[in-house]
Length: 270
Ligand code: BGC
Image (cartoon, rainbow, N blue to C red; front, side, top):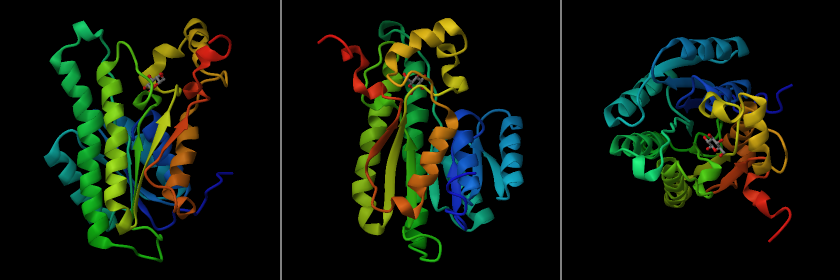
């Protein structure tokens, strides 16, 4: 039984990058909690359509919207459509993200720019449109005590340096202060902004880290809890953070990482 059933009844959510991995699990969890969901995606529509029908099976409404979050006009059109379809947006989950790995001296400007554009600029563009809508609508007390909620999907790499991934780590470090600065700016308007920082989660993005026994075993020394995380574990936290039970939580990063942030190298030694 999903623990938050009904918690987000009457609320409208927009989840970016919702056709796979963590975004998909978050979209389903918000729907289980009662929200209607805009399933943003890029690329082929098949995976997004699958998420839309899974949400409809749960009993919530869902629409797929194709948009590249790094493109200002596409983000604005997406929010316009979402508001036309659902009346408003109460919850934004800034999830869309990519990796493009290379040693720093081999990283092209294209690899740098694409990761910063999707992971950081994309979160800014979507947060800006969401806040415009939250301010326009204000608090509707029958729906939520808050005027709106933004959840940024960041990473343990907003804090942990990551050799071979400087574009990705820089984008997530940026997300941390983007999230906190927006949270500080809009708190008085009853808008809450937080980040979820996943560690290693079983998604297509990090398949190389868990696809075979050897890779999985090599990952385990980094995880004190000795298992990989599942996308649903991020979904459940997103549903809680979006709910009024989390009303006093804003401007914070919540790590879901099996202890990856605990400097496991120091279990013995130091
Ligand atoms: C990355 C994963 C990685 C994890 C832990 C995440 O942000 O997307 O690929 O396994 O951090 O290093």
